[in-house]
Image (cartoon, rainbow, N blue to C red):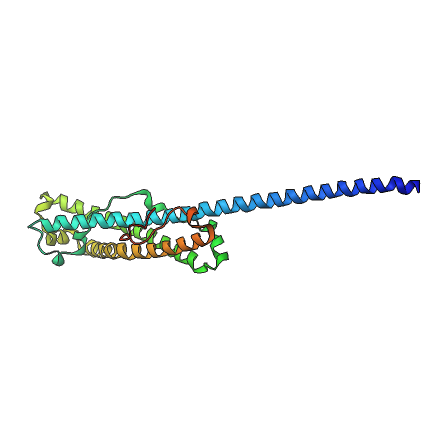
Length: 234
């Protein structure tokens, strides 16, 4: 009986101690899991907002060039010596385009895998197409500027002020190969800008909906949509 009386408190203390140890370990595990989930959510949100911001930069490049080409077109229309724009080769409508560091902007696909878990498998492919379109567009601009500079050197070698040379004369000076390249590249630039802009805005809107579904409206940095919608950017 004495042993039983001594053992009972010891067992109780052992149970309490054991329970405290397991409870502490359980709380530590739950706390660690919570912070890991919170950290993962923070990283995913940061990657999501960066992707949206990258798409907005793509759109800004297209919009900026669209405005630049429209201004150039207006200056051509205001020049009485230009003649009907429809009769001009496409390269006349596209001046040399200033280069920028935007060509290297890329989406971080390795950090956007969480989108797949929410049934947005196609979205990653569409984002990849957005990036490919943009990088290909920047390469087209670089190639166009290179050919344009080469033709400009030939025109300058004639020792005649450039404004006095007709478009037809410049095409002759350009040579058959460079003339073909100029027309092909400039046509691509003119068609790619509105097409790429529309596609990028469409995918950005899809991305925005997916991110709002996961993180909530207040957590998503930007919303990109039609430039005609004043509520598009915030």
